Length: 314
Image (cartoon, rainbow, N blue to C red):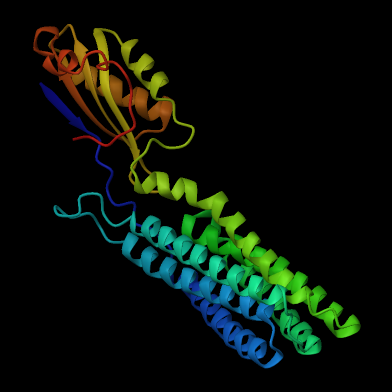
């Protein structure tokens, strides 16, 4: 039996202090905006403004977590942490989404409570602070736009900032309605709308993050295609026990058993790793090579021996 390992070394993020500085500024600006909106919302008695402020606070905390996770992800792999710390960003993203879900539910409950008896809202103050929020949201989105291409964390924060900008536009419109026509019902309705927007964004982003945490096969992967390609290799009689999973956002790994008809184990494992790398983008592979008469695992698992699954190796 032979094992071949194409080790996924720490992919050490090469982001410099400029990237960290951009995140730092984005966090500071969003914290300032959060304070202004929550205080202003309490003064104006506007749950919509408080909702927008809390959402901005969650964005700031998301950026703080993303910043810390990016720093951790730069750590090199060690014997105890053989994959490095790249998955720290995945954990941080999932924590952020869970926090946002809790925030959304709280906002919806507050809004429903106000629908029956909408309070008097200071529409002018709401419009002013929401206008300020719109500027800050767009500025924050501009700061993290380039970084959003590199990290699921930063991308989530970027999308939230764009959503915040849209929410701020809605709050401005609602404040204008209250200020011009005294339609105080606009405030709880807008709060509910903000909750829906937040949950909609979470539904778009949390799935891939959850899949990575559960070590599922990457979205769009083709386990049956991988098995077929490996079985087509010369001298390979069968391939089974395929496991595909994501180490982090940028690295996919695989383990598989090959039943071969020759003792040229090294050559076969090299060919198999090249197929996985070239055709499926899998650069971290562990391949176990077996002779037909020593393939106990394949018969032990019958009738599922030849099925590709998406669990990590045992």
